[in-house]
Length: 116
Image (tube, rainbow, N blue to C red):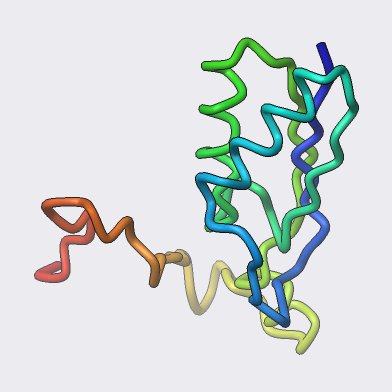
């Protein structure tokens, strides 16, 4: 049995041109791990912040495949930091919120409470 590394290589994915849909990516990772390979799955940003690393991890757990997560830095934090802008500051802004723009289109109800 192989091993999968979900690696935060970010920040961001400038191309955004994916050649496989997520379900096929999941299948390919499981297939290659079952062949005994060691897989380095590079993710743009942090694997667990809009990177679908959670979906990949669920597939790996279900398939009984060992994996490790190597955190990265999401672009939502990296870009302002690079520009010298803190996303939180005790005197000015005490919280930050990240909201996905790509919820699962098959969900019956949005996970966002837009009324708040």
